[in-house]
Image (tube, rainbow, N blue to C red; front, top):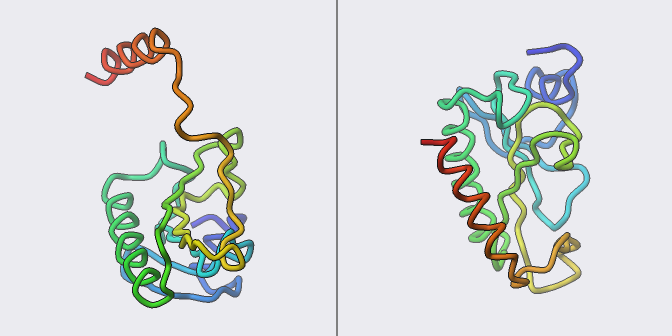
Length: 142
């Protein structure tokens, strides 16, 4: 843990939070800037800066906790769907540099759901760009 990390402070109890789940590896708490009713965060207890830094076992544990809590918000809060969101890097909207997954319940009722998309789904991209970038990623990843 790092003393200057807000989320490490939450894990240690030095910073108050509304805890919703905890196990040996993960800690989950309500987001104080919610995009919808029930918006929460799941973090590893061990500090990792972002998606590129987190060990695979911590990533798996956070993802499994997020899935369990996604099921909980659907069953308990009556959410109509759930978004899992991770922001990796300042340009991708990361503001706290401790890996976290947002579990964001989604509702058809706009009074419960204030989140809007930053792009328009369904707008087709350029096929040649998609193909060339896909090929580059494939070559680099395999």
